[in-house]
Image 1 (cartoon, rainbow, N blue to C red):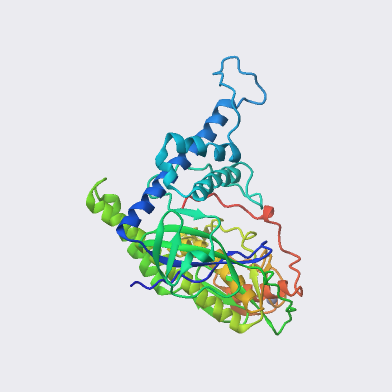
Image 2: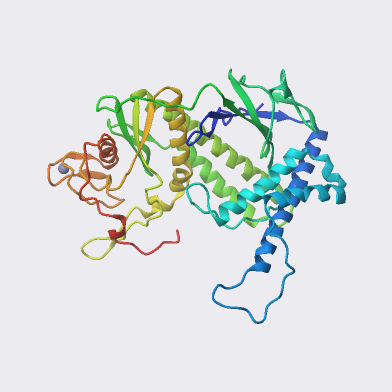
Length: 443
Ligand SMILES: [Zn+2]
């Protein structure tokens, strides 16, 4: 049996949730018959999802009109009600009459699919709770629709190391850890992954009203951390956490495999096998990364009760490194490769996951993670607070004003701590709009 490193108890929603919600994931062991049924369900749900998406797009296509012009020549659409969540939900009744095989699917799982269409559309048109809009919803091809939800799961479904799913039957489960006490099972999500089927149970604790820690940040109980591309993180005590070498190895292997896929003949068996390999490797990398994040979070939280981190939503991560030239006009390394290389792809995907894990673990232990605006923290001296401009390629901070000599990331981490403790105000921090923009890079 393969070791499942990603089966940690995982946060469903820590921020904004009133009640504490966590999710536990277990491996399902379906029989070949059950596997066929699960795949059939996914396929049916996917087709209906696509149809409902198309229905919504159609309505928009038919009913749009330029604001400032009345079209004299236009296809006149037959007036019809705009499809919405409720009308699409109602349409499931005739669907089951026309296509009786849809009766096979548990009705709540079918309704949840309609909800997914609604969410995809809402996020496209009006954005999520933070106003961040997503791209246009896409039609899902085979293997792009990989899960379905039982929105009202129950603890009664579980019996020993078996779980009974409505309309699907009894499944064997690898019960690698018990469900925590005092939690209520809310939903169950069945997911197809590269190496098999999983079930995710979201749990809610009615008694714990969400983690609230009242630790007051002080100089001696807090630490600042700076996340970077070269090292994974640097802390304000001068400690570092490097990016593990095995990431690099896995990524190189991935690149080689993907190269092979691109040269394999379309539709061939060899290609199919390679694609499977790529999917498994992706899964492995994701698991390695998650484990590394958990271990690193553990290490950080051992050092202090309050951790100051940079607020990633403020950090501009897509900026290009400015070109750097010597006196003769020769171009010098400017750190662009660090910004666009393999390291970056790992870091990009990782930082926010790491911060989520850190916040989750801190909350569980009564510790705190505080987000800090990182503006100017890499461009100022942590000792005298004067502005010391640096390029990304300058790895060392040496202050001409007070002669402080530090690693640049340590310097930033100390500043993050100072800003978090409110003892440093970066007065000369320039607003983002004043920063010189370098030409947009495609790398
Ligand atoms: Zn200084």
